[in-house]
Image (cartoon, rainbow, N blue to C red):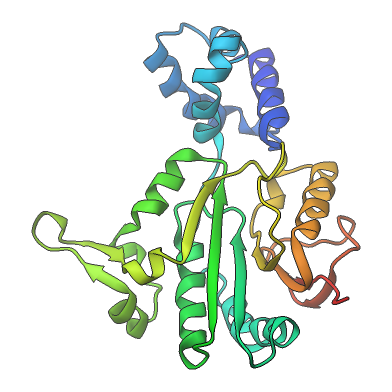
Length: 276
């Protein structure tokens, strides 16, 4: 891939989904798009760029390109202190704001859900929390720009080595183990799958397509891929979709310093939209 080819494709990625690719990512971009070139029978990355920016290519190929270049690293119970804070502090505070002891509906959002480990972890934790709060219910919206990972998450089937971080008692309660040809795989139980709705969403482009103000938003390990202006735009939009008194969780290597003054910091990498 020539420097010009990289610059053209990197600019297209940035315009489409906000991800900033530096020159050091040339090898990565070359590797990930090479399969698309072979599949389409194209001789060069310049030809690929011409195709993907054509009217036909934008319709047929642009989504495949974004699927190829987006990174989808995730785990069950990643950054476990967040889930401890969720049940110890965030959910009780939100519940006191929206319903007291009379019950209500908790709305949570996994804003970059990847293959589903994060929203299903949220579902396990929230389900446990609501065991003694039967008048409450919860819904989790799981969104990502990558179509392939959304299919994976919807299927909710994971090899055994990936479910190892799940506490043993949760594995017994919330996983079904495969047999026969499916041995070595686990599937999330229907009760949890019914809590999670997967949708494709571009965090930095177009209308989000929902007006719900979320009580809890997980947007972790995402902003590191965006430049500062895109980060500001992203968290201004997330703020508008966070209910007053709602909580925002970001990655442990991330910060909103210089990005957003709207949220107040309440713990390391945990923020809150001030209550009205």
